[in-house]
Image 1 (tube, helix red, strand yellow):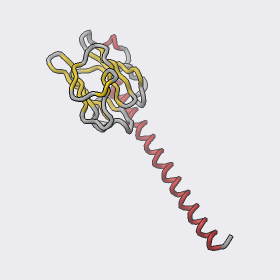
Image 2: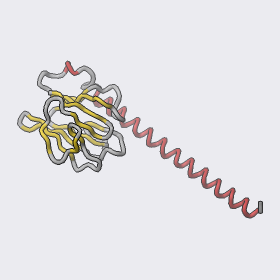
Image 3: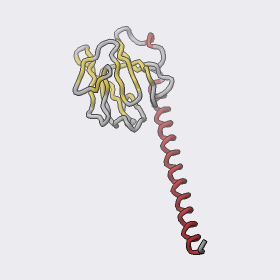
Image 4: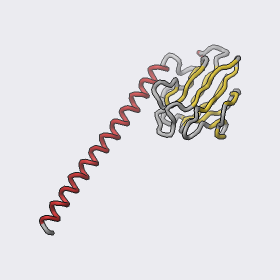
Length: 155
């Protein structure tokens, strides 16, 4: 091998190694961020999570059926007047997945009824297996899917 070619190969390998290290650090930081947001979420809901029977008799909840990347240890989320669902940390329900929009969907109470609204999310909100468009009135046992997380609405 010619010495000039060897030098070029050495430089290419050095830059490749540097790119690999930077990619590894980037992915590590992403995992750490997801873990931190998940822990913050668990801390936020620790007083509400767990036993659904502890909630008021007329309080509606979202029961977690399929967790995806949603916080472990949370069995149900009580719904007051409104809850927001999305990837952003300011949401009431944070799902740290790339397919979940920053502000994905919300559930709001109007005249003793709960309505599900998709907030123009990129990948959509699924209601009873169908892609949601607009608002829909939630009924007992309705299924809501956001990203890889599936909830059941219970009154």
